[in-house]
Image 1 (cartoon, chains in turn brown, blue, yellow, purple):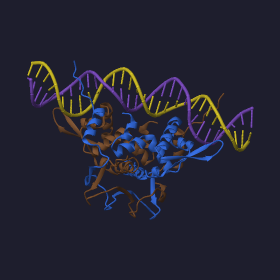
Image 2 (cartoon, protein in one colour; image 1 turned 180 degrees about the vertical axis):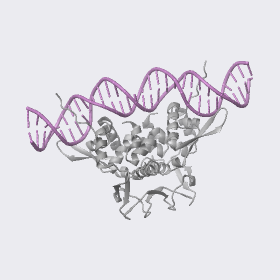
Image 3 (cartoon, helix red, strand yellow; image 1 turned 45 degrees about the vertical axis):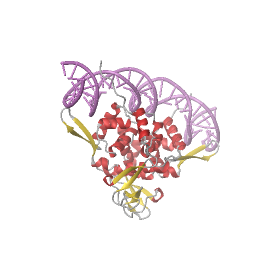
Length: 171
Length: 171
DNA sequence: TTCATATAGTTCTAAAATCGAACTGTCAAT
DNA sequence: ATTGACAGTTCGATTTTAGAACTATATGAA
């Protein structure tokens, strides 16, 4: 699959994955939320190759997740900060962290605790329904095609290009 | 970086990324939540190569995200279903979908709508604080080292192995 | 002046991952 | 006896990533 194609798919999950769904990008975003802003900062915090880091940052800027802002002239230097679109990834990050906290901790316990300044307490993130504010369970959610869904004809056409071709028999 | 090392890192985000943080795995999990259970089902829905699909499924089973269950004898056939650990990824999936719905839709609108059976309404997922039940904003959250955090000495040792080495001057 | 350091990249080759297609094996139905 | 469904495995070619060095600009020290 050409991964650029993901962004064209009629699926919000696929499109999101097309933008942030690889290991280095997710780790770069972690650093962003931890207030890292500069090339060298990302590089030394992550141990990513400079080549890939440059490429990933470029892509995140192109996608509007990060903004590249000059912080000095001569030599020109820029730093990378989260846009609102980038900040909106916070629930994604928290959901990933919380799953790790729940299922991947060793005997030592959580590496990081989160304090909510509003209430002053250590918390876990909980995902609720915007309408009734009850926690969401997969069993209680049904999906329906939305206005951006593909018609049957479109699905058929799309299948032709991605579906496994029939394999021929042995001679 | 050897990606197996991610699971050892003192960071719940890194550990989670080590398990589910690649494009195909995330798409496979989407299919799981859409009730796909069998090899051919995943393959034709995603267009993933059979080779990679087999590998990813094995890894998800090894990690306890999926369970491989026989559904017929002779020939032996199995299907892959989400464990509780896998079901717990629901907030991650919903967060990814919601970001896509917010920032990646085209003029046609959302591909999929979600109905909450509890209240009967179409909803968006909202992430709140478990303690005060207010929506979480990145600015209002502070992180503290938890019991599983690395000591300063451990951080230093870890840096030696991942940090960029000093580069020598040109001759 | 010359050297060293800081920062933000780019370039290059080798190694690893992925793709694409074919192949294996079991069983049921025709 | 052949075809099709299903769940993989194998293999060569292509694409990505890793790892290291190199470029460029400027500051401050020897």
